[in-house]
Image (cartoon, rainbow, N blue to C red):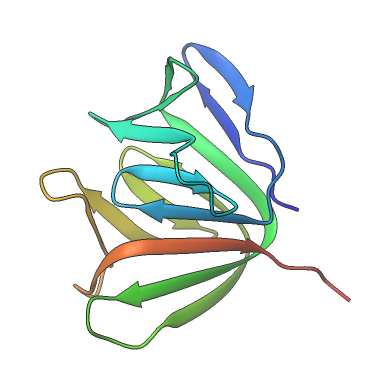
Length: 123
């Protein structure tokens, strides 16, 4: 299960455990729910009416990136975190959120509408 922890000057808050988190543009969805659990605005995540500058998801996780019109890329990492409009993994920048059109862009220039983060069970 994934545990997402938001943090910032306003303190800390935890999202209920989930098996899948989806980043669709500037919205964070949990386990296929139709309504976003958090929304990204002006370099902050609004969660339960409070703004946070960062969220962390300890792993292990599987990250699925589906570029517009391209094949899915799968990454496996120990954990991921999001700060200042950027989704990171250890030693890597995964994607940056372009707030003008709510598209995720990788360092290679690929664009994504959706990033899926799944819990990965280790043997």
